[in-house]
Every structure is written in structure tokens, then in C-alpha cells.
Image (cartoon, rainbow, N blue to C red; front, side):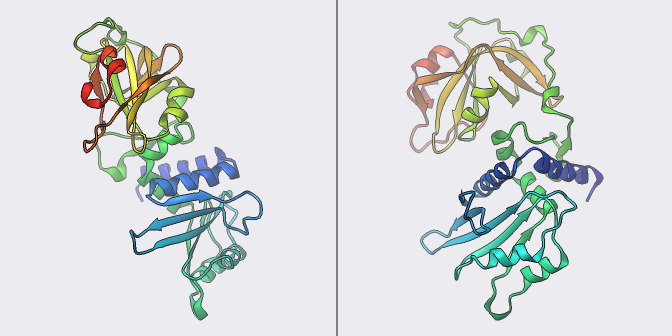
Length: 304
């Protein structure tokens, strides 16, 4: 593992240990499964019998594969014992699978017990901190939208995917110095454009746009910055519509990535009538420009 990648893995493990409570970490694992195309649900905090999250992978009309998962947010030096593996195995019904996910690692006895398939035992999958961090990296775009303030890494641009992450000090270090061309100079009647539409994973509005009053990692050409007075958010499936917008107060550089962060002036606003994706057509995959007048009067994306 290259030095930079090893530093990223270490930073992710530290973030998961220090920035999540045990209950929040279980919710995070549930979301990670969802990002990996599993159905997932968290079990009640009490009486779970060692099962914290249940994942389901559908094989169409053939079958649903159920995975019972025990989640352990432990410090790196606190290893998972074979007792955890035995407890989880005892909850499995025929045809079910088990998995233990931790931020730490496993004792040799735990590994032996997990791999023991004698006398009809079901093998238990073990995911240690390094394996978990790699899964997070594979799904980081979705995760960073849902958890924008939890991880001290960012994706680097225009380099191979396996080398595309680096450690940063804090998301609070976003530069807020503004150049003159970043200030809106258009009018609401501008017939070119004055509004940028950005895509978001479903839930991004509630998790980020509304509470943070900002949207970041947006690629905007320098010549267009002075034209942007408003930002609107398109939520992907199942919403598949532009649902909220807000006035842009200022635009700043985003961590030397070549992208921007847009800060709102005032509160975000929910559209009275959502601008929906037309049937049979793709939604918004990248940024799109329009006018506020068109946005407020549109019924579908075609009207923009």
C-alpha cells in the first residue's frame, strides 16, 4: 500500500472511531450497505442478541439473501474475540449469513472460529478497520454527501482512482476569500442564466443544503461565477425532482480543488411545485444552468 493511501486509510479509521457514537456508527454501516445496493435496517438498541444491522441483497425473483451484522466501534488496540463470532453465529437461521464489522481487528481465535465450517456451521465474514476503510473509499461520493463533516479526507482530481484521496486538516479550512468576478452581477430577468442547478443524492437537501446553507465541490467556470445569483438542488431517485433553491450570497474556492463552495444568503426555499424528471428521460447528472423565472414556472426539467 502506497504511503499516501496508507495515510488515507489511517485517517478514515481514526474518523470512524472518534467522530461517531456507537449508535451513529451503526447507522453509518446501515447507510454504507445502502450505498452498496443492499437493503438495510438497524435493529433496536436493546434486545438485538448481537445483531446490529440486517442487510438484504435481492436476487430478483429467485431469492433474497439476508446478512446479519454485528458492528463494533472499537479502538485499534482492542481486538474482537471469538465470543463475538459465536454470539452472532447463534442468531443465524438456515440460509442466513453473518458478518462482523469493526474499526479494530480480530484475535487469531476469532478468525479460526469465523472460518470453521465443520458440522454445518456457517462461515462468518470478518471486516476489520482496513477492510472497512476500503469499502468507504469505494463508496465515498455517496458517503461524503450524507456525512459531509465526518471525514478528514477529500478526493483529488484527474489522477487514478486508487490514488485519488488525500488527508486534509478540516472542512472548516475552506477558503472564503472572494474575487470580484465571484459576486452576482446579473438581474433576475437575465435571459441567459442566473441560476445553477446541482444534483444531489436523495436526502442531501435535508442533511446538507438546509442545515449548512451551502453547497460545495461544484465545478464552475470563472466566466460564469458573476452570473450565478441562485442555486437549486435536484434530488436523485426516488424523488427525481428539483425541490429547493436559495439565493447565493457568495462563492468561494473549495480547498484548492478547482471547485467552489456556494454560500446562501438567507434560508433555503422549498419549491411550491417540484420540477420533476420527465418519464423515460435521465435526470440531472451534472450542473445545469437556467434562469430563476424558468425554474419557478417549470413543471418538468424539459421546461428549463
